[in-house]
Amino acid sequence: MYISKKLQNYLSIMAILSAAFGLVAVGLFGLSKGSQQGTDFFVFYKAGSLLLEGVSPWIAMMGDEMPFAYPPHATSVFLAYAYLPKSVALFLHNILNIFSMLVILWFSNKHFIHAKFGKPLDLAQGVGLSVILGSTFAFHLVFLGQITIMIYLALLLSWHALKRHYIQVSSILLAFATFKPQVALVYIIWLSLNKEFKVIIYAGVYSIFLMIPSIYIVGLIDSFKDWLLSIENYTTRDANTNNSQNVYGLSSFLRSLGIETGYYLIIIPTLLMGFLYVFRERLPELLIFHTLMFVNVMFVYAHDVDMILLAVLWGFFFVNSIRQNRLFLTLIGFVFLLMLSFPQRIIRPLDIEYLIHYREIVTLAFFMMTYIFWGQILMNKDAHADLSSKN
Picture 1 (tube, rainbow, N blue to C red):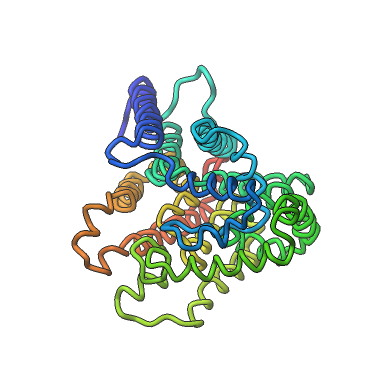
Picture 2 (spheres, rainbow, N blue to C red):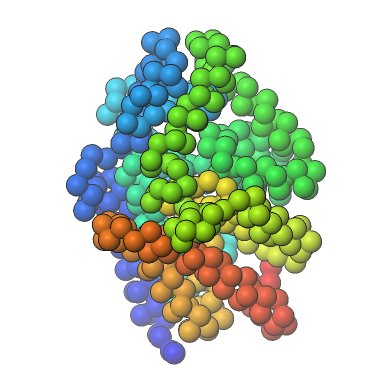
């Protein structure tokens, strides 16, 4: 299907502006949300304030509606927030979240979108940029005041720095990424498989450094003991159990069908990691990295908003499918994306468990389609140079 370059540029600009509007309107101003912006951020702020008062936030907040269960080294950042007025701290946090999304967008553009400032955009570039920036999961994470976008960026840049042999930079970024250990877990396992022990060790050292305020105020042993107690408390809350509507992953989907899950599920991520390791020289770096993120989302522990970890993979898919003129495949991709982004507040009142967790199957199908598509590209000797180069 032929679309003039002028129309492609116009459609691309409109799509990017719409995505930016959504990020600001929903993420910062709560359009259609009907509640206060920054509810998760206020948990971080309260934790920092309690620490500033010499109180263990893990124990003090255990009875709260939203308890605090982040590791001791994460408190150094939350403590810094507590020195600021709450409104100023939230403003700074929002700026960091938006900035993180823009850096993720810049990173994606540099590695596979290749849009140039002042030059007209083609449809692939416009779709790629708008799909990443316009992720509804990003909207919601900014609205909540979560740190997942920053964690995702830290992991992405840690990977990028390691590939360029910046060991210390990679380690510092990994230390920050472990503010959410479950998100960084599979990446750390991958580093171990590739014998990148220096990165893991240095990240541990930097984490200890970040832990100093918690050690000084609460104590070394008590910080870890209180944190572990808070994790136990956190995971027993209704919103955080495997049966919850908010918890994402294959295990949750199978439970919604009445199928009990067990250790047998570890077979799938193990095979995936083995496949990645064997074919790591033939696969693009971004595809390898986001396969690790896929394993995290589907097989470790995640909430539905953690789907942001796959945002760049979606952009990667659409850019390449459009450049390959795979119209039908692109349309299927858009259907999947719409299904993933469909408002859950419409579906959840129906109280049909397997319908609430349908997005896990869509994620799995989208992921498999991406790999099948890439396999076809690898077998096509005439594929575009941008697609055959490793990012």
